[in-house]
Image (cartoon, rainbow, N blue to C red; front, side, top):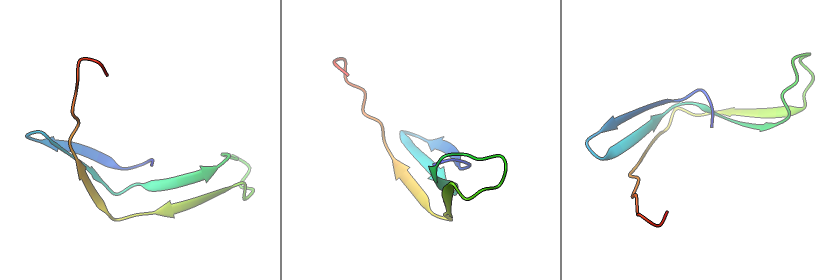
Amino acid sequence: MTGGQMGKIGNTFYLIGGQRFDGRYNPMGHRTYKQTYTDGIRKFEIQNTKSN
């Protein structure tokens, strides 16, 4: 995902918006990639263990 916004409230992270970008970037505008935009919100927590 690219172009989203991430924030944190308490122990919960929120990823808002963004796009999925598959393929190779091409500055010449040739279609070597596919972009899919999202207006979704994903929330998650990160658990940190001493072994990982």
